[in-house]
Image 1 (cartoon, helix red, strand yellow):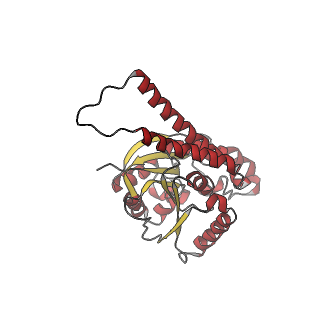
Image 2: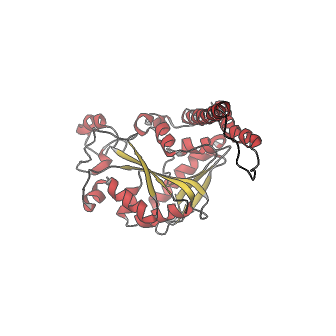
Image 3: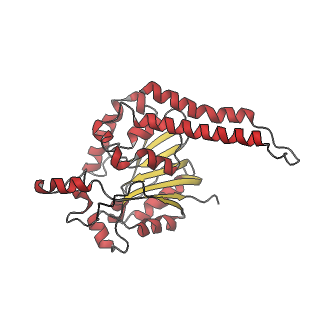
Amino acid sequence: MQRVLATALASALLLPILAACNAQPDADTAAPAATDTETAAATEATDTGTTAAADALAAAIAGDWRDPANVARDSARHPAETLAFFGIEPGQTVVEITPGGGWYTEILAPYLRDGGHYVGAIWADGASDYYDKTNAKLREKVAAAPAAYDQAEWRAFDPKSPQFGPAGSADAVLTFRNVHNWVNSDTGEAYFQAFFDVLKPGGTLGVVEHRAKPDTDLETMKKSGYMTEALVIELAEKAGFELVEKSEANANPNDTADHPNGVWMLPPGNRHDEADAAKYEAIGESDRMTLRFRKPEA
């Protein structure tokens, strides 16, 4: 499986090199219009590059280093559709915010390993016992599969004053199901500003978050773990981002977003009485917004 991944990644990375070799220097006079043959060739090259990247992503998702319990959740988390929507490509520098147990790390780090750069932004040691235990488990995971994770970088940050790397250094910042934590700790604005700062102009911020019904009040959001799209968009736009597009890749119409103990009653949290297990299993994982933002060029 690792050989398949390496082959797919190599194909994805070779295409830009071949394209660069064929590039012509700028001339003082206007270039002649492209012929139909040239246009068709360019389109074919683009399509081939897109296919190679998709194949590389599929190989990463199918990797034998992934935890079987995580693989079982692919149908709920839709990694191929989600990462394609965010425009993540093998040659990019991507910062994943608080990867937790490494669900997306298992896919992103190998996918970016040979031509790009995966950065996992983790809590600084000593921030809390919970954070320390989570970091320890993640380190155990990556140490057990060096062929998949040996090129990954781990950047520790202060959760009260987050910074995620040199300004303008990342092509994309991704955060999965985290925004409610920052809203609860009143650090949402600081996080989104830090995302903006680390991204290159034109860079992408991809957000997946549990989705509350429109007009849900702030206190209900904090208690339930579900955020309104309006609140997330407000946080992003206040930091300077532009909303590019919304996706329903992670939507779940079975989820009412109204549960006595919040989103944690649903899988995989399952914080409910045993008698209610079938009920919440039938609902599935939460209804989630999937939003793509862009840092303006200037």
